Length: 350
Ligand code: SF4
Ligand code: SF4
Image 1 (cartoon, rainbow, N blue to C red):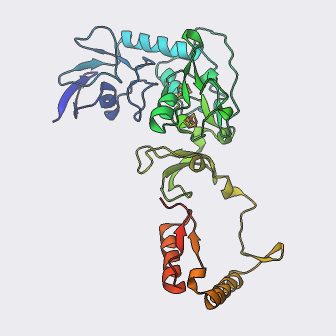
Image 2 (tube, rainbow, N blue to C red; image 1 turned 135 degrees about the vertical axis):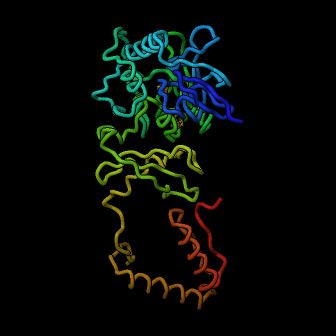
Image 3 (cartoon, rainbow, N blue to C red; image 1 turned 45 degrees about the vertical axis):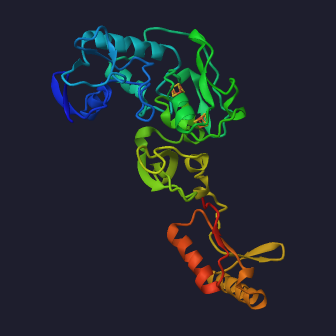
């Protein structure tokens, strides 16, 4: 049943089981938030999404308070803004958030919050340098940009369930660690990149994206991953005619934004000079280029010879996981109906 809530003087209708933040977002009211993510839900860690709610003492985190019938919420009072500015100022001060050189510039949620709150430069200076971790094959970790929102940890442990990341140490020394504080490349991380996709700032970045493009230079092309039969949905971030980044399409079946290491990072082959563009026929130890007609005649001739000498069950076929469904269907038809054997399989069958 629909209910009504008032946010900043606007009477809004909502369905049950929504938080104040969700109702506000659905109605185009921006409440800065950093630790909240649709996929992992309320965390109430960063306290940037605070609001005033009539009848409730002090400030409330909009990501964790359930919207209720008749609730009156204010997102833009002086008390709210002061609290939000203080949190964002501290986050900006506690690290090295140099937007000019950050790969996340233009798609950073901390940058958005600072801009919205009119913060030009952080008023505090907290000098504590932290080394980047470049040991991961595909992911760069920059702790100086980390705001300790915990979204990467939630994603790693509860979405892809790889259980690599956690908060380590205490108090001011708290930081995100891999396993028992191992370099990412020496940890149990499988480089799936879910944490990168969850990170609201530039603390986790795809190595291949570094220096490749600014966010506003790319367009997004939705496609299906070419690697296996699961059919994960991808967003290709393309600059000119080059893919510079791949993310999982949020909210789309079957992967809901998650990807494996191949789908997210294994797109270099597209641009490889070593790709085969003509059939090759083996002659002794070497291969020579051939036409398609010549290659197909050779294969058909060998098949006929084997069938004649040993029967059709002497032949087996394995179709490629990258083939489209229609090609795999044709392959099994060829083997069953033309060659006459059931020796046909697919390398990514489940
Ligand atoms: S890449 Fe995947 S496994 Fe590795 S830390 Fe990130 S989410 Fe966990
Ligand atoms: S690395 Fe990113 S997602 Fe993880 S805690 Fe830091 S800011 Fe949040």
